[in-house]
Image (cartoon, rainbow, N blue to C red; front, top):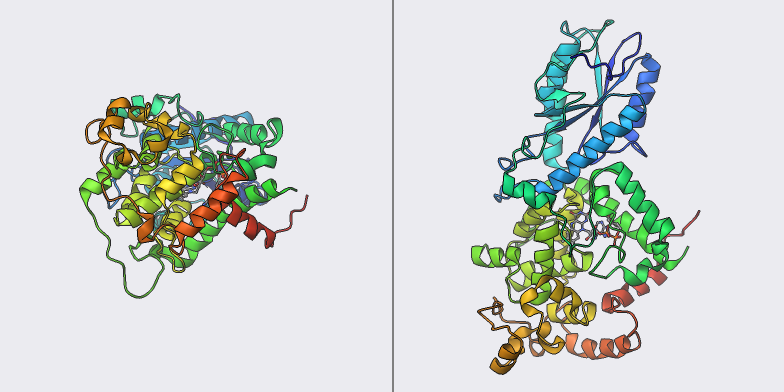
Amino acid sequence: MAARNIPHGSTNTSINIQWFRLMDLRLHDNQSLVKTIEFAKKDLTGILPIFCFDPRIFGNEARSEFGSIKCGPRRAKFILEGVLDLRKQLESRGSGFIVAYGKPEVEFVKILKMIDPNRDIPCRIFCQEEVCSEELLVDNAVRNAITRHYNKSNLHPVWDIDEIDKCSANYMPTLSDLGYNQQQIQHANTVHERGVMSFIGGETAALARCKEFIWDKDLIKVYFDTRNGLIGPDYSTKFSPWLAHEMRVANKSTYWVVFELLVRDYFKFFAKKHGNKIFFSGGTTTGAEKKWGSDKRHITAWKEGRTGFPFVDANMRELAETGFMSNRGRQNVCSFLAHDLNQDWRYGADYFGSILLDHDVHSNWGNWCAGAGMTGGRINKFNIVKQSKDYDQYGDYVRRWLPELKDVPVDFLHQPWTMSQFHQIESNCRLGVDYPDPIVPPYNPKQGGGKGNGDNRKRGVREQKKNNNNNNNRNRGRGQREDMKSLKQGQIIMKD
Ligand SMILES: Cc1cc2nc3c(=O)[nH]c(=O)nc-3n(C[C@H](O)[C@H](O)[C@H](O)COP(=O)(O)OP(=O)(O)OC[C@H]3O[C@@H](n4cnc5c(N)ncnc54)[C@H](O)[C@@H]3O)c2cc1C
């Protein structure tokens, strides 16, 4: 079948491929697309937009060095929706969009051979610049494959690539084609009623969420006070799944949204600067490397949300069920794995990489590396019980994800190990039977530790006093006030 939708100019003096990759599935604000259009205009030729579902990323065969699947089925579904939406967007503007299943370096050559069997037309490929090693390896492979394929320049008539199996302007794989099994597909298609919201991939849904958050609900102006929340769609922007794959978008709150977006960019520069060090157990620190554990029992309990620490477990179960977790949750479970369990933080980063809907290699590995204290400077160990009391004061979040604790009174909810036998029976929750005993001894304030310099006891009292002045805001904890301090020293000036 002829690829009639694929745009081509009347005088094809070059082939300009717009290679959409995982992180730029959008038309708005897409610099590489702008470049492709510039060149195509100059050459009076067309643009060939392409996306490849790379088997090194998708499906059960694609594994990380820690053994996790690289892209969980839920994220794969989100990306599929994004690619489908991009095709709709391109077609509505009169363009076709080739989608292929295969390695880009192989698929591009196949496509180019079909278009130009005599290898006469020079080809340019435009794509977003990536900075991490796996992406750079693919870049090199594509560059080598194309250079080998092309040498001289000429005119060329018709493009007809639909004969290539699993590659055409109409082709769109299913989750099953990408290598996921029925159980995984069913899980990916389930919208969890307790999840923060239902995420649909694609630039259209991304722009709609932007409009809803910023304009319709006007939530950006209260973001500063709500951003440490745990339940529902509106405590934070929820832009991250779209930002990770598709799109980008004065008061104190608007400042903080911009600030957080800058943090995202910061981690990309951080990855560019430090290269593969962000994947090393010692991170970007130099000198003696910390000895990390790799206790399968602890790591599995952490992943499954069965550590006996309710705040950690609730967050990990939310992640497993929905592919999302709040920033507050991520900081806590990261600290818990690295500092309380003393397990190699990379098991955590790897698991997040597999399962997060918004996985972004720079933000994920950068945050993990920092959370584990492997970027130098102060190590932030979180006092999990204090954090859960601060940020889930009434236990709504813990109860939402841990039904076995639903009858446990709030006084015990964040540290169920303090329940007597009597309380356990009263609350229908026997420790070690209905809910696990803590897998490591709980933090004891009398022995120091906790986030910061270990002086948590005094600080705890101070904060409680401060918190008492703030009873109307469930999400406001110590972190919030520290952020406020830095806001006063903030360097960023907002302009229209
Ligand atoms: C251990 C750990 C792993 C993380 N892994 C990822 C990841 O793979 N992908 C990802 O996008 N974010 C990651 N984050 C950052 C952050 O938790 C999420 O971006 C945020 O929770 C997403 O929700 P939101 O869009 O509602 O964020 P909001 O609070 O509304 O923030 C707005 C945007 O700012 C950016 N942002 C906010 N905080 C951070 C941060 N600490 N680092 C980088 N960007 C930030 C995100 O793009 C986010 O969408 C991680 C954080 C931690 C502690």
